[in-house]
Length: 201
Image 1 (cartoon, rainbow, N blue to C red):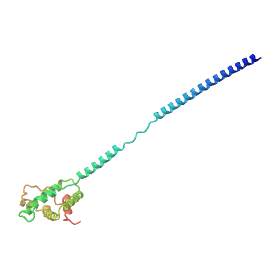
Image 2 (cartoon, rainbow, N blue to C red):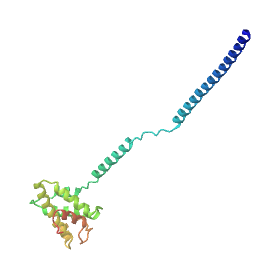
Image 3 (cartoon, one colour):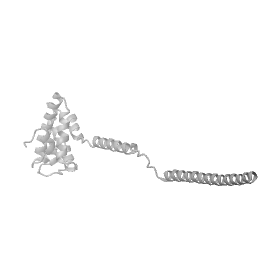
């Protein structure tokens, strides 16, 4: 009887051990499967993250340089477009006040001023502004003298617009000069004289 009991106990223990082994094996397999799934999920997430395009940082340096270059270019262009009137410098250097033959020199200067006025393509308003700037840049004493010289040239210029222009040219040593102007005022010349205060608005 005791032997039979022990035998039955051994059989039960064997069955229990076998069952435990099967259960442990199943748990281990499930655990490995879970770990594998988690690893695959992690790898998939990393691949997905790496596949997402990260926007590159916008470089505004180039745009800033272009803007600065454009602004610098505009400033340089404005500076280069500052209108100058060399004809005024020539009048100021050649015409003399209160000297012998000064009136004849003024006639010669008026002829050159007429020639310039007939052929310049400058706008009269721009000429007036440039002439005003030129006069303003002179010192007080130089400005007064420059205005007197312009007044002398203006007097000769107005006489050249009249019928006795030929006689005046011959007297001033300009016999070879052909009369290429008419009797109407020349707008660019008028703009200079207006800037000098020799014309009424």
